[in-house]
Image (cartoon, rainbow over all chains, first blue to last red; front, side):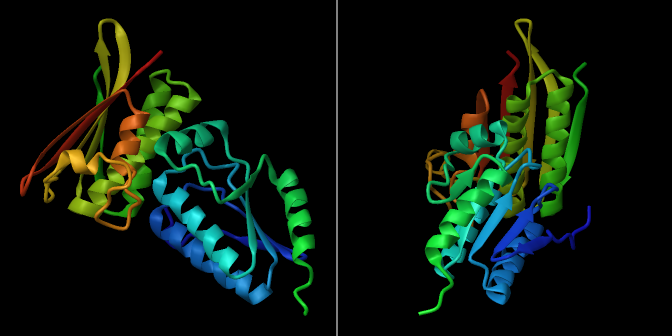
Length: 128
Length: 133
């Protein structure tokens, strides 16, 4: 396993998209959080979509990290939408006690994009 | 039968290795996708506890059978500081480290049987089982 693994973060218009395709160990997950927040700052993105379709396990560490990312991005004025949670992942997260109540979610990437377009339209272009 | 597999926990990479091992074993034993996720997630929580509190330890996974019912048994052992108050750590939200305090109670909810034996200064052994439907 590559410990220097980085999750690619793509920019489309005002939106960043990160699709997590491999099992994250703790250090790579923390690296992802740092990379994403820096990229939000650099690109002035209005929204971030994190797609978890490929993840078959989300434990409390990753769940908490995602909640932290959403809160931190929110402080920077950027909305986060989580997409593609598998049924087994949704079930285990709730059974663990991690319902991520303050994180916006959508069934899949396509629906996530339309949620994000609505959200970022409300934010406007940021000019006063 | 009763072949066991062990993962040694020394780093955060080993947490992923342990839970992958548990998931593969659960799948081989015929557990469905949701139970595989429960078992893998419970192992992730327990292996992380070993890494955070004891530094090193072992996670062993094996098939078990009781009254004709098949299941998976996971044993997590460490020679760490031990848990002074087990009732306290089993409460939701209790944490002494950077966790959220849902590791142990969360893992217990995901499994069918869950037993903690711990002695201060000696170590901790957590044995948990899940039975196949």
